[in-house]
Amino acid sequence: MTLETIIPKIEKKMIYATGFNHTVLFDLGDDGFIHIDGTQSPPELSTEEKDADVTLETTATVLNDILDGTQDPNVAFLMRKLKIRGNLKLAMKLNAFLES
Image (cartoon, rainbow, N blue to C red):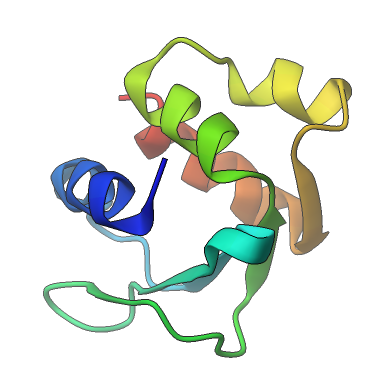
């Protein structure tokens, strides 16, 4: 998986993120970063490592599987395939639109 394949999937999911006025950083290790700025309208995506309200650390493969619906983010978290730094409640809100 690459950022080029994941970013369009996140962009499609952003339509479900109305009212999500926060920032999120996906830390994909060696594969890079995806930063979502939901305080902008429309939300802005970048591949820069920036400060965020919540950071989700995982692999590109796991994130792709979550976006495709083949990996439940809650199970990924429990199996330690997904780590959350920052606001846990915000991560749960994010979960709602990632699964949509």
